[in-house]
Length: 402
Ligand SMILES: [Zn+2]
Image (cartoon, rainbow, N blue to C red):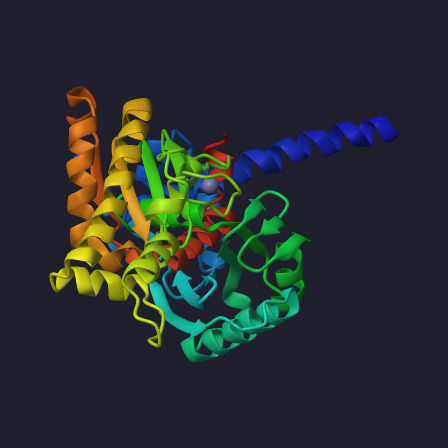
């Protein structure tokens, strides 16, 4: 009898699985089309009308989908088809971007449109408890402010720096907050009551670019996160690699510049925001004044200060050379530079591009473009909303397995 039961379980298990995959495929189609009819869904996915109707009815009941008007009557006659679209006021997700200096929370609907976005300074004392408490209360306030029911929130996506395992939700190491082996997703779940997915900030930012920014429909991309460190991630065939990249720690100079990783001559040690600030404070700073920030250095450079200009452009040259190595190696469609780069956009970009043009093969240059992120500092929170939608609504892993 036990064996029989086992068989039944396996069979129903498979049926449930097939239904889940079909549901994910239908939702994905709705995501990609503003409106679509049941017949069009059935044709596109090669599913029976019966299967599509059953799943769509369930989605309507769950307030994921609404009927929104009628389409044109078919040429061979018959009634006008009812059009379906995602329900923008039925269910929502939360995205959180936790950075050293600030924490941003946003609520998004099923189309990924943001209802609201709030940015506050991150707590000074970086204990796990403090950060979690701050995030939880910010989420509570945001839900209240948006005027939506808490049970209409389907999940929470979090962008945070460090060595992160998205599958287990564990932060093995956080250089920003000095945490080790923290089961961050679980702790946040317990605190907020929302199912939670976390991932490394650079990967989340790249996801943000894919959903909202300059990487829509881009198959192969190299994404660089310019900040106090230099993060990076590789996208191949539309898929963000789960592997950790260390573009920032490639060797670029014989100069005796020490890097946070313990080595000398790394890209991060000469071209990151931290590096720009350190060099500027050493070279330009008059004692007695506050420390120069990278933004101040960029402003000085833009006003024509030769020494400041030199610092920014030298950082750009190192970046440009390193980017050309990656371009020659990966032959991507796009190289996107995001993060805090906006502070020096023009000058830095000119310097990056000059060096990139000089060192990259024509064959590669013809097809790869280097761009500055269109989302700027918001790519993390946009990406966190996308991460949550991806995991808890559209279940991309189910229809697009690695
Ligand atoms: Zn290094």
